[in-house]
Length: 240
Image (cartoon, helix red, strand yellow):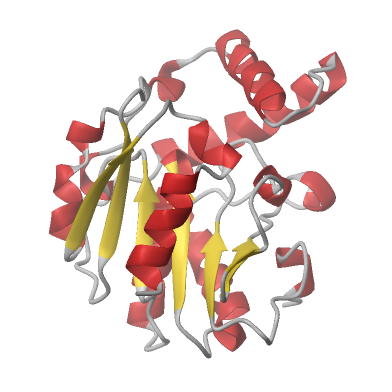
């Protein structure tokens, strides 16, 4: 499996540590365009999933388990230094599942798993997106595109809606009865103005491993702007 298509750019050999970032539902890796490439010696490495952007012609994954099966093989050669995994909302769940698969295969496990704005896997699926019609999801796509600095042309909205709908259906299929407890620590990131996932619903991440809880300022989509308190959390919890 070619690793190159999974990255916007080849991970640097100069970094002291890496943070692998999964894209938000309905988005591709370019959604991290406002994030720095480096935080000191920590490299931000966006992951590109099939079914979007330059991989649009490829079929999206139907389950997070299948995604994790392939992703760990792609990441394996790059786990030669301390690393973390980050996911926000829907992408926090495949981030967790990837950490589980790394553990099961005897590969290096993350030095820290960051899960943002999402309930623990055994308490889901959760979120209003799961019950939305295509028209309602299209409104969310419009908001997402504007948030990312783009112009919501009808063709772009239609294309992004197709991706988001596929991601929502994958989310619906993921409901493990009992979580696998990870040997690596977890940072559960909530947002004090988040109307999608109340940060007080995230306490059960403690069932998945030793967990640090942080509540950051802002609404659900603030993470896209690389806010300083989020970047500080990465440095404090992964690089300290």
